[in-house]
Length: 281
Length: 332
Image 1 (cartoon, chains in turn yellow, green):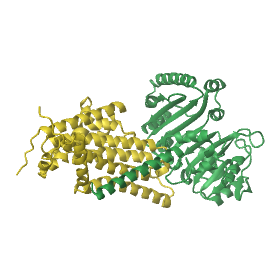
Image 2 (image 1 turned 90 degrees about the vertical axis):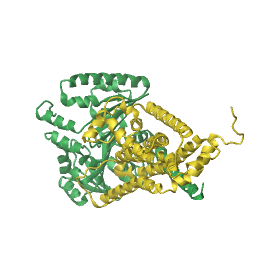
Image 3 (image 1 turned 45 degrees about the vertical axis):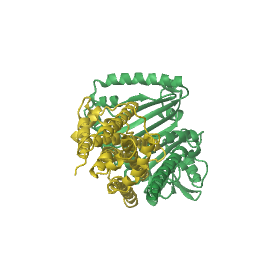
Image 4 (image 1 turned 180 degrees about the vertical axis):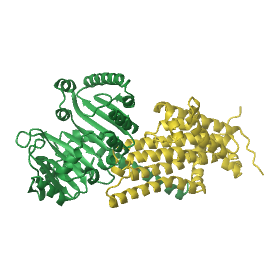
């Protein structure tokens, strides 16, 4: 057995070095424009709703329009924008790109020829994905909260625990989706297509089907963590979802999300260590 | 890490920390019903006396435009309409003139003004002061000045032994009720101790969910108003405070909460309620219109708190209306 060179950096040190390198690349890439639109959209929407409410109060004294409370509206935005769209989309686009981008750009050779463990590349890039998305998504949620909750007498103070639960839930979603799609990116060809099919085909589809298949999704466990009631949806799909929406407990969900994350990252690390990436000429 | 990246990370963390810090302060200190506005709970609480035994709030505008109200009105067409009486006496149309209402019960009046509890309703909305005053004068009301505010006091009646008083405390805010409480509300306009300094009451107000209708108060205030049978009141006496909160729109969902003196009383009360629920569910078996109501009831709470939550879909009101129409349920 050959002992590793004494000066070879550890996995943690290497991962931190890769993290340092990748964070800037990830933040200031072309993909950042897409990310900004994705997380800025809800803030703009919330500002527009708030403005409309203020104008309505100023100019419309009595009307027959139905009003919903700020907390309910915030809950709807969390469900419909963040849980159903933003978190899976970020997971797919960034998670699958962690390794696949380096392969496509033919720059993975430069990383793999450094004297660092290969899995440190994946872990470092995963950490930079987490930092990047969490630092963008969570402030966006906080901004939406302060814009939307005060509408129609909602209390910023009383609903604060809901905000904390939402932030925790979204962070858990980004962690789990990122790990799952990092695995897809590390192991499979055409990871983006497969990721999109998984996030927007498999997951919503399986959640409609009674039985145990839904346990093979991240969404099933993530939706159990959402502190808001699911918005009432009277479409056929909505009714089906609500008929079968028996979600697990918070502890069970957190345990499963943690298990998924750890096993996906471990498997992805193995794939990066073992796989021979053939760069197309 | 480049300086651009470092600045981004710092800015993002700062935004997050400022947001969380503000929320945390709001949660503990109890500021803002609306961010950066003064007061905890609705602003009108500053006109409620500190010794109020019951405080209630309703977002009238939200309720009046809700689908629940529309269906309930259709369902219960034959019930007597208290709105008309109030409109005749004060000239205020509840449906169109009022945005939100805070009501309170004061201490027991000791003779003189009235035998019952003094009560006050503070309504925020759009009012035609001249028309309302003229209408009340037509009904025999007298006008006096109190603290620079015109205090209009109606003739004595069985419902209002001291006469129903009304005053426009500030633009868009009218106080209606017992003369002593309306005067107290006018006095509080210039500051002083209001119910917002009553820690017991405000703790309950803060603990409520953001429903568009809620009430909190001492249980003895509720029992005396509800005229509960003496035996039942004695059974329920361990209750010290109660709180009820509901959201009316897209159905009706809410929670009733009772605080008992000790955990043993809470356990006993839970057993009693559980028994009633079982009996009611048994009875509802033959009445499909009541089954969804019964199924939505959920008994909970821990320690000295007993909570009963419920959720009614809007369709429930249609079914109730149909049941009333067929004479299965009779309005009292």
